[in-house]
Length: 117
Image (cartoon, rainbow, N blue to C red; front, side, top):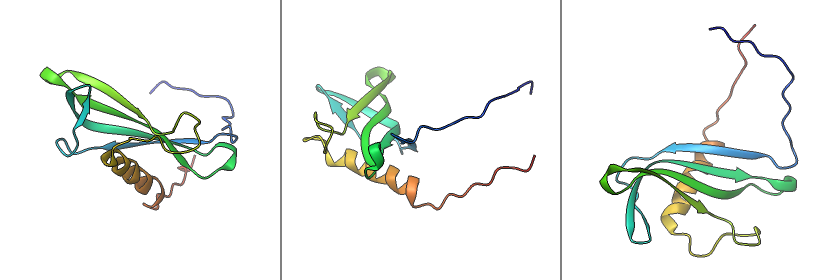
């Protein structure tokens, strides 16, 4: 592999964000938007902790299959207009996806050690 890298990456800590991906078992969730059904197979859940507040789920983006097998993306904003609480009317099944993502992000005990140079 012909790759080089230089620099000293820095992460902004004022508004840390985490994006958790989930591979969904096809057929376990159906999204209906404007009368059209979509079958998601993947979800990205975005969490943030602005100003060191508790972690909050901001949005979920689904990769799904729509009518005639067409690939689509469906995004659900989880925060209300003031961004200080949950958006009313978000279906319980979507909150279950968020809970699965939160569990996999924080409760699986992932540890990592950089490989020796």
